[in-house]
Image (cartoon, rainbow, N blue to C red):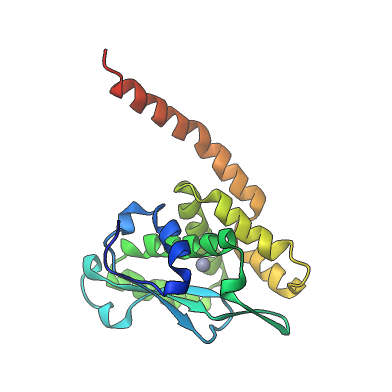
Length: 198
Ligand SMILES: [Zn+2]
């Protein structure tokens, strides 16, 4: 099914589900790791520091997952989230790994610096991750995650505004799905025609 993964038992089913959408990450080393808290975010994908200067083909990644999810003053355990929401969240992070995978070491350095200093760049990067996830068929999960954040009355307007500013909206995701819809169907039909013995 896959190799080179370190996955905490408690989120194993959700991570495995998300991984099924990314066959190209089957053998890429990825560790999923809980952390007490992560500044400003709930999950974060990054290259493993000690593998930073090895060729990109050998690079390993770590996806940090905050143990708790903060909604203003209240704390929730990440594992209390609905499965679909969690799968969507993990799928988005795997989208980041896809984005990093083909970047050179130098490219990753520039990328990291830009992420620190340019809000425009953050927006681009976050949209890229969502786009990869949707292109691989994860739209229902990505939409579940958005819905969880945007339609949750307990989540602060400030956090919602940040998500709205930086991430794709549910409408944009639907647009993306509709755009790729016919192409995907065409491909399937073509394949079936090829496979049909004449
Ligand atoms: Zn992200």
